[in-house]
Image 1 (cartoon, rainbow, N blue to C red):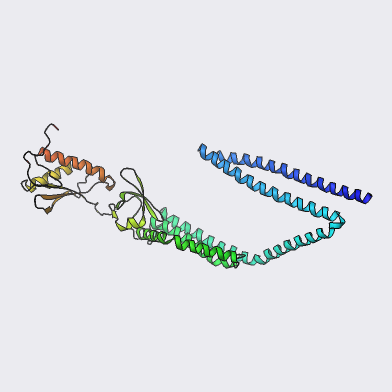
Image 2: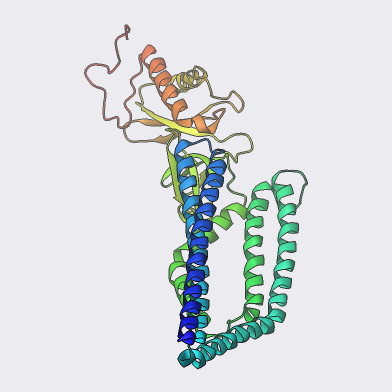
Length: 385
């Protein structure tokens, strides 16, 4: 009877210890969660946007809760395991089973420790490779950033090519470091690693065909120095000022304040860069006038309309040429240079209005785009207009 009574007392004491351990874990977890919530709220106060502040605080609290709960569950399971093994050791019938479970656990821990110890030399090699890659990354990153910010000059790179080269070199350094360090990673020769490698290679080969084409087109635009941020360009999908040259696409701001994203292959196929002319790019507009109007008069009227238009440069001066002698009319082309190519659309609208005013004031009919014959009544607005 005393032996059974002692056994019962030991089991009750162990159960009370487990309950105390569980209560301690629960209270500690609640205290940690409250503390982390306060830290998350304090960190989120620095965010000016109220919506982003709520999102950031909620995300940080979610991460804190998940980590704290996982740690508390792990500690609770450790307590349950210790309680179970000690209880089994207390009971004579299950004492051998408890010893077997303990030996098995210690063997697993010992095996993990030996595996970790044997992996230390390989991990040291991986750390050394990472250190070398980090040093190369920092050195080249500062060098190309200095060129991008025009702190130093280079005969090979300008600010745009330096920024692109910096990103390419960063990717190349870390890819090479990963390839060199991969054989030294623990478990790199396992079937799981091989399966992941095959899957990653398959996904890359299937999804990178178009991406590689856009990427190489972008490199040809950048390193060919035919395109720079701030240039005014025209492509098959629109025109505007280049705001950014990305990895696979260019972003433009159109004269209508539209934000255009155009793939590099489309840009390279039909690019017109109006910001690369040495003396300013020349735009053209056309009118067709009948053969009965002297060409000298037409020339003077077009030049006068160009002089009336603010934003057209006097040097180089506007030029009028007879582009074609058609069957029923002469096609005249007015060439002019704007102060800023980005104002081309607005400038053309004002120029067309001035051309109409000059020709109407002189009594000359504009029969564009097709002139088939003189009408019975001249197509000229009344003077009062």
